[in-house]
Length: 343
Image (cartoon, rainbow, N blue to C red):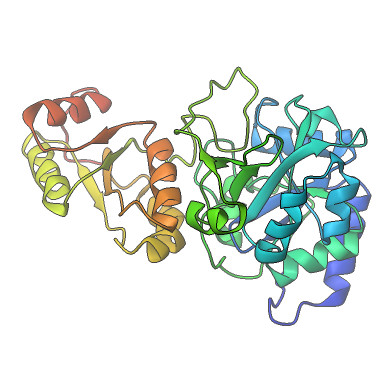
């Protein structure tokens, strides 16, 4: 159903809420990406999320709520610092990890004693949550490991009807997922960079521990969503370039001379614009070449989140020069078989 983000149709939201309460799946927009939602406290409903996405049970889900009071109900120990963060950043792209209440099923927390919570800053998402009247677990509405969806068309192409309702409110505004912040210890820990920068969080909490990039095995329980190495990935092999534009274009030229169809994805070097465009750019290039190259962006503000996604989308293949050995490595991704056709 198409729904106006500026003036959401109440009858559509009521139907979406009914589907959630009945154990169904609703794909819906947030300010970050589109999510695939189910009743968070209904294990049978949330199991449908894992099945629809092909998502391993080791990857925890974020629980979306309509009001801060619900967050306290889902937590067994509510830290004081959470109230200061909520006042500043909710609704918004900040997910807080807290000790979970016994009412929260282990199936959505990767068997951890914590739960991840946020209030999205999107009128359609908030309307759905208010209509449902229950917490809604909602990872991104795409197949596991694939490019996150920022439009309803993306959701349709990814999940091909593996939901009961899709709310189409147009493109998302931010374009990358929320920041995930763990509040269960003495010092807050940033688990995943996202829509709220580390500097902004420090301005509220003071001391902040920022973990080095996590690359959890899919066989292990992840600390937070988006921790696996293979994530946000196009089907076409991707290589991230950490350096100036000529490195990427020189590599494309070198690979072309070897008979390899290499594509260069243009991504803005403005972190905010890059975040907004990231998944659209990756999706537009998928399948157009044998291998894709994309430049990383300046690592400040939203650029930290963008570069984290590019690292995982490229499965850790980050290069910093256009040497023959780098070209050899990239050639090996396509089996060393030069051709002028795409695959």
